[in-house]
Image (tube, rainbow, N blue to C red; front, side, top):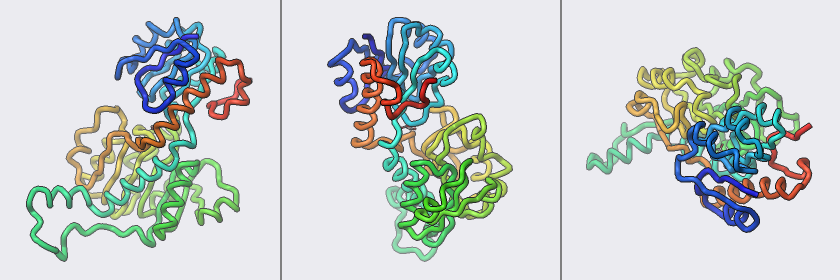
Length: 324
Ligand code: DGY
């Protein structure tokens, strides 16, 4: 069988696939364009894609032999899942293995934005440290604060565990309320209305998938409802936040800060975010640890191998949906 891996990935995934099948590995960025995928996909039985690869209806239509798309990411908004379903193409992702790394990164962003570490370090490195200053870089403590979590799935819960360790109070919003015993475990209070959550919390961390419903969930109106001392953290998907509205809120000091690992038009970052005060920016690295990227690699390869081996779909744990 022929497998296209759109570009080199860390870990043993490519080795595992190559031991059993004929594997082509693309160049960095080569398959970030629909037209290039449409051109080559007809000769492949399986595709290992990255979140930057648009696996659209056109690509799936061209992939007459295609049997499975395995995304090297937990998010799969780059894949037209409905179009895949219609054509009997399976879709898998890499859940679980990146939960802890992503929650760590959300916390890195929160701590950095709350304590102005980037500005403080820049100040020191540029030779401006003149000794202990009673007014120097005053930030916000995490202890005792209300942290709002949007999306209480695996990563939201891992963030909640960290927040509990820091003595924070947890509020959450999710389309589905957790079971009472799970709420108790995370000492988490469900807030049914998103508007109420943004008004009440000191910090807001986004852990929901990108869907038509969550696009611009954080918009001008909701940014306007946040406390002036609030900090927004996004490690989910860029378009969940209206970046232009966020940049304006930061530039006008309407909220205290933001920490972003994801952007609306990656790799482009809204120019106003680059100059906004107290905006910590990372280049989509939340899952970037040796351990996690290695596990993602093996998991992404394993669903392809299982499916090409003819194993039943319900035995593949990381499928995005079970076929009818
Ligand atoms: C994902 O998996 O969706 C992250 O954004 C990258 O690891």
